[in-house]
Image 1: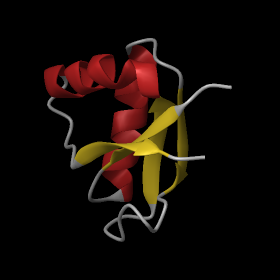
Image 2: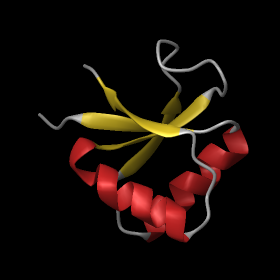
Image 3: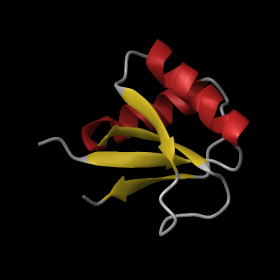
Length: 75
């Protein structure tokens, strides 16, 4: 079973933008509600494969997409 991480941002519009950037980069992503134990800043986050964390961070940096942090998502 795959392990996931979440991209945390400060607003829903940033989450939607991050999702678009990551999909264009060919990464498997899904927009999800932000797990409350990780953040209460924004109601949306982007779920990614944990193995894609470095590629995700690089794609978001290249696109100058706002990013708070990337956290592991425990099952």
